[in-house]
Amino acid sequence: MNIELSISRLRKVAFFLFIIPTIALIGSLLFHNILISYKFSHGENYTIENIIPGEKVTFELNQDNNFGRNIKFDKYSKLGECNIYEVDKIISLEKSKIFYMKMDPNFQLDELIKNTNEKIYYKIQFTKKLNDKCILNSNLIYVYKLIPIVFEKIYDLKYNKKTSLGTSGQVNPILNGETSISNIVKRYPVKMLFKPLMYVSIILMIVYWYLNNLVLNNINNRIKNNNFYIFGILSAIFLFFHVIFLGWSFETEIFAKGRRYFVVFFILFEILAQTFLIVDILKNKNRVSSFLNDIVVKLKVIFIILICSSSIIILVTLSIYNLSSKVDYILEWNYFLILLLFYFLSSIMWKKKLLSYPTST
Image (cartoon, rainbow, N blue to C red):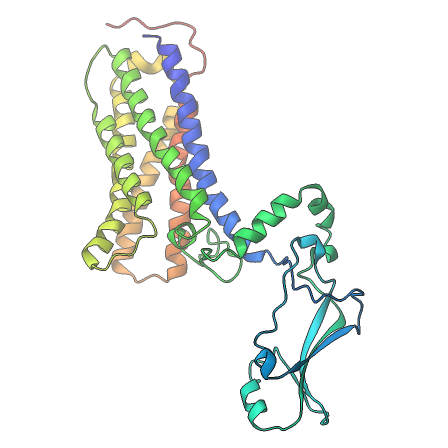
């Protein structure tokens, strides 16, 4: 077997195993924030030729139009055709000077209809205030003219009936702990980014542990499924179950708890696999040293010690103290991102070029 080729593949798989889950986590968070903050809208087409402050369109509210309930306006087909100015929507009486803002949540049209004999009018009037939901008023209009399809697709996703975002505003849970990972990534459309990337990551995990097993068996002249290989495959299996059930609702508490245990076992078996891997390397140091960067091996040993000790500290702390949800979420986001450094260290631990091959003894 060509050891150098296998090591080259292992380096590449480990690197992508670091990059892809990182993109899945950070990319999902950015995607969520983009959708949350996206304010541009097609807007309603009031069929007014001159959209300038003061221009208006007026309708009488009567039984023919079900007192305005049947008055509907088509939306512009493109973001670039929006109304530049905001509108006031006013309900007014024919003779009295009384008027009501239709946007007022306390306004009750039915009560007005019962308590007046005057004609009721619905007036839509453009104001002098610029409409911040109109992309024509934004500096992004220049980008929109170059790639309108990107803005239109974001709009379609933002206002899709299936879209359900985890928060009402932009968040940075890595620093501020506003929400959990699952709350962000389990919802449409963010899950359409997160889940496929995680499925690819799971496949790469299986290949990663297979190649580690293959390379170390070949270097040490043995044929067996090493402990790190077994635990590595188990971690991939539990990650798969965690991802596939992410966002599912279970009626029984047993299944709900079972889903939470998937991620616990994924972390446990991943740490065990990485620990057994480095132990195997250190036990056979004389044979494998020429294939490895010694400094990175030492860094990985230190990293494993830090991860194991910090995991124990976190578990003990959580069992003793009732930490706030913000602290829990900060720990969750950062812990998973830091955990991915296992694969980055693996990608640089093996030497890129081998000058000579050691002879087995």
